[in-house]
Image (cartoon, rainbow over all chains, first blue to last red; front, side):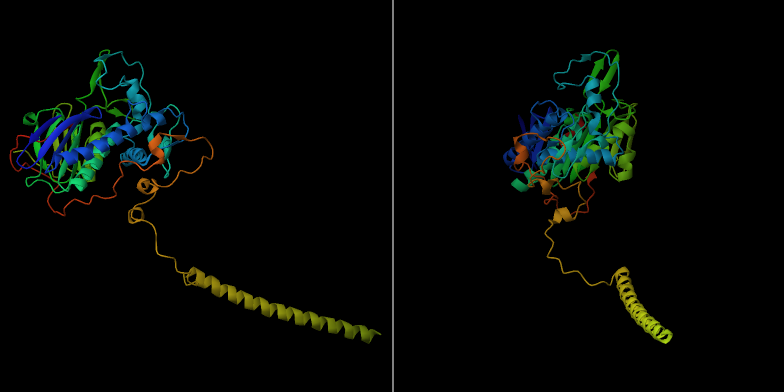
Length: 303
Length: 133
């Protein structure tokens, strides 16, 4: 765990959910960390694709039988299904089987850089095949694999930031692998956020810097979680329409009222371009595979 | 003899006429009552229903359409029994309140008209980095 002190906030980083977590707090960083860790533990137990005892894995092994979820797991599934509905199925939690078929079937840290060639691509069953009742009972058809990866991390950021801010009474920023949520009174100069292809980029080396005042900011990129399969390079953002990794847009960042909404717009942007964020009226920055940068809806121009 | 039969027939006919007239009057009255009731019903002026007790729906539930955001309010409701297939409980937490309770709305956001994202106000050495993960 690394700790840093700025003139207006303290920060610390640690690893969780298979990525890096950053907390910045105007005060009481220890209190904020305690709350954030509690949320992360709960989200991991509910939504991990790589823990045999997670609720998500119970659902994926259910063979079509109904499964009663905890309130948190049910909310995570609902968030994922809402994302699919709002994006016309572009951000679809039933891409799990397609992602596995591409070779991403263990944690990325365990994934060999070279995988066997992909001989077939799997059609996505589609989010409409998933039934979630208001009492938290979910039914997923046999063979359909849910993957809550993107939206669950963003949901964790929203919940963690809100909980930490309420509990400590101070402004908090929570970044989970670059999915950022802020809550409470921000520092005098706002929350400084660098934008890059990878969230592991050093702050001094980012492509752009903006100041976030409230809500959430998220980036999706095809430049990370990449691996070779035969003579092809694959990545983890799958277009449900083809079962193949998305192409055309390299990195998309969006700002919205919540980190979940920002994440959905960013992922949608990688799959179909930033039109969704543009129509939603949310600030966005999108980079094509060729490196051209498009900004819109009030995204700050860089001086 | 013929006169007697004629008088008897006339008496029966008058009786039938009386019954028919009574039936017509009664029918007309019923038709009138039903017409008035139907007209009042269609115009929305039917007798008011007894006043309902004050709503007990939580504010967050009332403000959002079901079922998309009802998880928070259903978390304390026991699941319905299985009807067509056995149900699997995902984990021990399924039957208890979650350790992380979703909050309906943020309560700590200060009211502001400032844009949500702006150009950097000053150069910092440290900050969060948003990128692919």
